[in-house]
Length: 413
View (cartoon, rainbow, N blue to C red):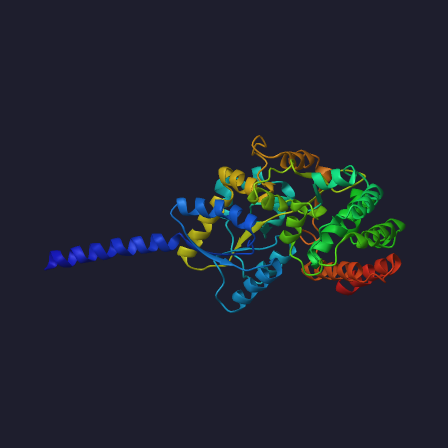
């Protein structure tokens, strides 16, 4: 009987050990990647996680704003997801300061993240010197995708300046082609606005506006020219734009019913999912600009402040998977972005990605998205609102738009 008890005890211990191990590799992952291209890219990470013995509990929430709100609400409710997508920078810092975010510094130290990440990105992925997020990629926001056949039909070339773009857009409209495929949501309108801001004002002006909130730059004639150019673009979108999702706009451009889309390079994920090689029937170029710049945004996963060992082990496994070089290549080729690791070769990437990686070799070209690094969420949100108001109110003059932009920032500070 004693031997039987010992066997039962041993069997129970084995079961307990198995349970702890399985539990340690189980992670609920909350994210906002719900389009076809995004889901296909995320599958690369999910498959690698499962291959290492992990169990992935998927919690998709459509829309970045909705997903971030869901994370915060669940944190307040005491049931945060194990791992969650979030914007790194001020927004994540705000959660970390309240003790709601955990760190994966052990994984970062073992993986030597400091040596392979761009310094700017490494800095904003940390809080109090410890990594609280695992960055997965670098996206560029200031891309101009175009349907080659549509441009050929209207007999226009790929524009290199904004005056050239407006001329081309008029020809496209005359040919019965919608010049700009735009989804009428504030963040999409901001991407178009920021492409113009960089293109008209240049890198120094862009930095003064968003990194410094420089009063002289905001009130300058250059800023007025930005608003005049944006105002001139209003007539080149179709009536169905308001409320349209970005991937639907991408489909318009891919089919050729629209010619251009100003969107982050995650749009390439939709191309890949549709069987289109970026740079072929759909071309890519950085939006017209007087000097080279790449407006970066970063997809990253952060980690709840878990107290139990099982959850912490799951988080560590996820962090290791995200930064694995092979996963970086597989994910980014599918997503349309480029690896966040600087030691990954560009040999297997498309021509658009090669252009991005080449552009980022110039540190002066490395610019941050207005909502990503330096601005608190209150200010970046207010900026989006001001841009959206100006874009959608066609009676608002460029002078009034600039004044609203300045007033909105002042009120949010």
